Amino acid sequence: MRADQPDTAAGGRARSRFAGEGLALLATVLWAGSFILARGLRNDVPPVALNFWRWAIASIVVVPFTLRQTMSNRTAVRRHWRYLVVASALGVTVYNTLVYVAGRTTAAVNLSLLAICTPIFIVVLARFYGGERIGWWRVLGIVLAVTGVVVLVSGGSVRRLASLEVRSGDLWMLAATMVFAVYSLLARRRPAELPLPAFVLCTFWLGTLFALPADLVERAVKGSFALTAPTVEGLLYVGLGASVVAFVAWNAAIDRVGAARPALIYYLIPVFTAVGGVLLLHEHVGLVEVGSMVLIVCGTAVGARGGGEPSRQG
Image (tube, rainbow, N blue to C red; front, top):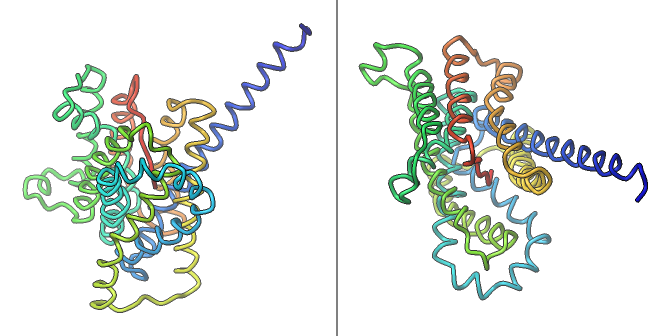
């Protein structure tokens, strides 16, 4: 064995770790941009239309990369069609539509802060519906995160909290996060005979089809949105960047460095969203938002100690 082989192997591991962390960072930044767009396009593209066209674009793009394995496993797809229907409706149709509805009345940073509470909701659901034990670290994480959410939705005002005068967008996003927690539990229980490419293709296409009737109703009531350069660029971003590229980058990162490191990077989403919201949307980030950010990020990270990394589909 050559003397330089251990150094070479160590260098290879370091490069792989660096690449994995870079891919996780790329996915995180792209997802942060999605929350910024949800807010930025609120007056240009209706929420249902934004969700429908996002996944219509993503569904078309993934076909060349997923169709072969989907066809090879079509027996498993037929066997688990009920599972795929529920996962598609929750993870693609309902969750993302609620996010875009929320973006019409609350700041981008609020969207991202509430979104990263997903692991906390997963822990709670797993306890009550799966019988999983909640350790002290997770209890502490839940307390911190819930405190942060209360501070965020109340604006730090005891009077507002007492009168329940919270922003509707925060409540819509809270509902979206709960929906995504249920979806995440389903995704973790994906049947072993159903490979990831087949799962992606089926959920993307089914979720898009489920969103179509609501899009047609919204179009009949509100009319079509204008295809300006900003709206087209925004749709391409959420369809390609925040859906396909981020999804591939995230899973490639997990393949290289495991789930723990990407999960820690994922909790930086509110930071990136806050910076983007200030620079691009001129949103105000005050002491209340910063304080709630610290509580929620710390609470979610502590609650995920020893496992429970976030599961993302976009």
